Length: 372
Image (cartoon, rainbow, N blue to C red):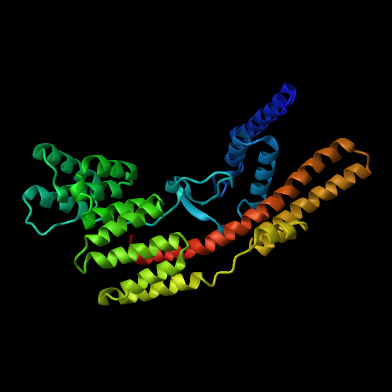
């Protein structure tokens, strides 16, 4: 195994440090006076800081060049995230995955679970708190009653899981389920269904399907079965297993009260089978002409940006060398090479982004229809 010379490693580190310094200088002294904010999250400068910190200099240079070409263009191709300063287009480097909590989702409402037994005043109060979306207050009341009871109560525990889910304390809910729920209660259909929803929120689709199968085994009424079939359809859709998704919605259509939504979701899943993917290799090949790959994947504004930026840099390099201004020619040539390679790399990623966006559009509609 060969070892890189220390001088080369130090040189790379110095370049990365210098890049961070330049970006830091821009953020401190220039960004604030530009009069506008970056429409993407993280911002281009923070994106650059992230890539230069987490990858080698050449990769970071190419990744940042690609981001600069794409910044503010073709908004429909990105997911939304809601930040303190408004909605932004979510765009993390391709080597990393954006945290789940950054993805914007509509407000959801959570309601209490009731068994067939009559409740005392404390339980009624808890359910009223939950139904009025006071989940933190309901959780505190549940914990107080748990302390006083000193025994496991299934209805109380299910509502505790609902409150934790509503507060997006997903890991804590799973920990409570694994450590504090006796095994004989884990097969309860409502509890298993709530755990399936939590696994869905965490994008653990296989684990969620396991939980729905447990819920279905213990379900013996027409109230729980439809929502399990509906969740299964959504889970298979998120795994891009459209055939099983369609089967789940077919099963849902057996219930008269759910025929309309079953038909709508079945058609959405069926439409996913007609999706025509864009091929990353073809996008990369088209990018030999700057912007060609982006145009192929529907990123029209980015395609124009890539063509203009690469064209101007190529012209600047040519004229600098022609006028024997070799220093400037080398500088513009390096930038031209970076943006050119970034254009090819970015186009291949844009193909994957296009394909993913088409599928996510369908799963988002399914989730909206399902009210989960």
